[in-house]
Image (cartoon, rainbow, N blue to C red; front, side, top):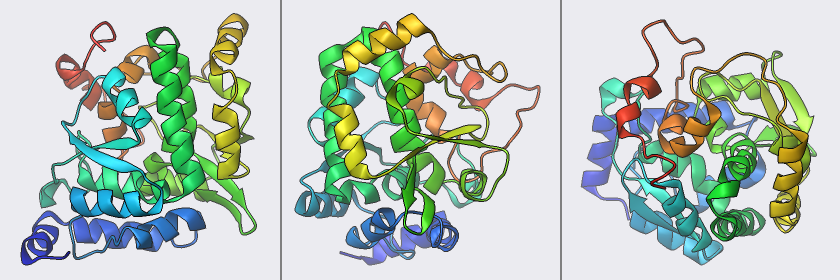
Length: 293
């Protein structure tokens, strides 16, 4: 239900401007399932999304839910929530002066980026089963397992009758990433192959150089039902592909602190990092450690 307070919040924080800007950009770039999900959740420019409303609508469509959390949670807790059919959402709202860039994920990124596709049953099934597999396999497999999440939930593309479309939250919530994935000519686009994905290191400090493209969301359901543990062991034996350049933040550390890392993708991420350091380096003291996860 829309109230005067949520409408006022939208005006004060600039979330309405963010919504309008991204929806205009995504009209011919995001997949139909994502755009349908935005409508199903009732997301609007003049209304800050409320977790209760989002959770209720998701439950009515696919049985998924949401849970408000601090900006940073341990990976183990993240996977546990997914296995329960709950997507963890940061609940604070950015200020208007931070409309183009913030260092932590806010409710706009979480709801606008992650929740619309959870109205698609195949995608919701995949996310839940991903969480179940992560909980079952444990910490030893988490680093490689998160590569699946990174190249689908965060930066996934899908082939459609209308052409290639985006659905990953890191793409749909960032104009720079949207344009790079859908208009740019520098990135490499690869058909999704599980073993290749498991051997591909990801970057958090630049616009993505590699995107993987699925054929359908049903394909994701099929992939997650494979013997993921055995495939990860095989990927470890084969080794990780060589990076195109050395990242500012090691992939292991990026995995452990993925929530903060993803915040760098929100809306207007700079393409280059200056010599003064990165937001992740400045905030490293707040990151959960792998040992504590």
